[in-house]
Structure formats: structure tokens, C-alpha cells
Length: 378
Image (cartoon, rainbow, N blue to C red):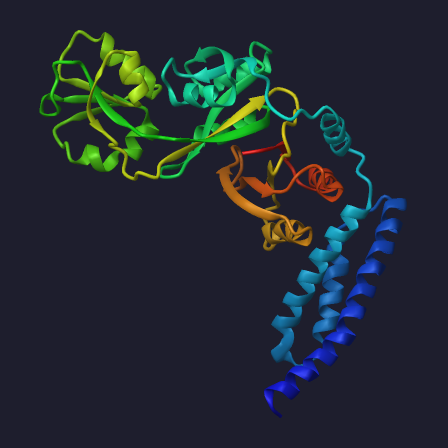
């Protein structure tokens, strides 16, 4: 047979296969109703094993692996369909809808904002891009920024979450497991590092350099070209610049922004010392309560999945079933467990979709350590 004839045969098979698949999914919907009445869970592992044993016996052994994979996919789609059909009783979907009713188009121009570091830090630069007239309160650690928001000292907090060159800011991801806050907005800030020093210093004079660990990592190539220079860690790039400006010693420098140079009266010995010119840091603007601003094109959440084969695939299939694109997956070790992880997701979705809201509710019911971190614009 020619390929055109074979493809025509496939088309005829599909014409029979699709209606049967739809009928199967509709039947699983009816089963979902019965499960809810009888207060049964969506997943029935015993029933799935029975079906797999039965269907794999309907063909030659050479097709067993293919049939098993096919039906595991069907099971996953069926479970997603069932969970989305049933209303959620945990309150998350209702909480999202209430917050959505209070949605505002943009962040307020005036607000009290918590930042890590000091004046001239990249967090301060990100804040000024988000708010036209912010009242900034500076804290020495990321955790204290979150504490200030949780305790109501500041309405908003600004935290760096990832850099295009050096990757995720793991300290912030780890704090997400320990604190409850929501992301209201995010912004990407172009990062251009400079080597700063006092007016009389020359590059060849520098013996010690201070900066934040992320900045040091982003400037590793430049620092490697100065093998005799000792590198010290600072709480923040702006803190490093301020420290150098106030130190009576000579032959010391800081890696920070040109803004810090002007702010602390330091000379730029070398501009653009980062490894790559296309260097951006993504900052998140967090709030204590769930708040929505703008159209909201990204959803962030955290959860744990069972430590079993196919568990992560089963979760991802739920996103795929609703045509939700996963922008990012970040995993962090779960303290007190034996090599188990908590996963952070950025999804291309918004809470204006009823199905997406219902999905959040079902995920909260199904997965431990679930946190809906927010829906926001970037």
C-alpha cells in the first residue's frame, strides 16, 4: 500500500477512535459525580491497575509498553477532568474570586515599601520603577523584608528572585516555604555592574573588593582576571559601596551600580564588569494579602508531589489539559524529608479563567505544601 492509502486508513481509525475517547471521558465525568456523592477520592490506584492488566492482555506482548503508556495518559486526563468537574470546598477558589473583584489596574503611586540593603541598591532601583513616590524602609536580610510585610510595617516588599546569568536567588525560594505572602507584580531590571573606588585609586591599586554573592558570581570572569585581589561578601551591592566610601583604608573597591558611585562619591574604575552584557534580575513585589493588579498573565505556585514514579508527569498533564504553558519549574529540598522536593511553578495563565481558578482549588486539595503565590503582570 502507498503512504496515501495508509494515511487514509489511519483517518478511518481516528474517526472511530475519537468518539470512543469522548464517550470514555464523558463516562468518567459521571463517575466523578458518584465519587463526590460517596465522598471518594478521585484517584483509585487499584482500579487503574485492574484496567492496565486487562487492556494489556488484549494484544500481543510487543505492544504492552505502548498500551500501558497510552492508558496512563488517559488515566491522567480522566483524573484532571474529574477534579475540575467537582466544586472545591477548601475556599481557595472563592478567595481568589473575592480578591479579583477588588482588582486594580496598577500599583498605587505612593506606598510604604520594604527593601533589602540600602539606598542605591538594585532593589531600590526596581522599587522606583514600580512606584513613583515610594516610602522606602531598608532591612538587612530578605527575611526581614518579608517580616515587615507580614507584620504590616510595609504594604509592599521587593525581593530579587532570579538573574538571567547567575540563576535563581535560592534564599528567596527557601523563604517561600516558611512564610505566607503573595506576589502582586514583577519587573525585570537591567543589571550593569561597575568597579567603584575612592577618587585617588587606580585599578592596579585595588587589593580587596566587596560585593553581594550574586554580583560576585555575575562578575566572576572579571574577578578571575585579578588573581591577587581578595574578594569579600557584603549584604548588598549598595552596602558594599557605602562601606568602601566610609572606610579609611586605601586600595579597596566595591562592585555595584553606577548609581551607587554617584550616591557615595566613588569613582568608576571599570564599567560593565559583569560576565554578559544581557544581564537582568527579576524582582517580585509581594504583599501580605492576595491582591491583583493589571491583567495578570502569570500565576506562581508551590507544592510537593508524591515521591512515586509519574507523579510530576501527572501534575504537568493537568496544566497541559487546560493548555497552560509552564514558564518555569524550580525545585528546592524539603527539610526533614529523605530527598524529597518542593516545586515552584510559573504558569502562563490568569485568574480570569474559571477553569484556571478551579484548577488552583483542586491542586490545593490534592498536593501537600500547596501555596498559591499570586497572579500578576510582569
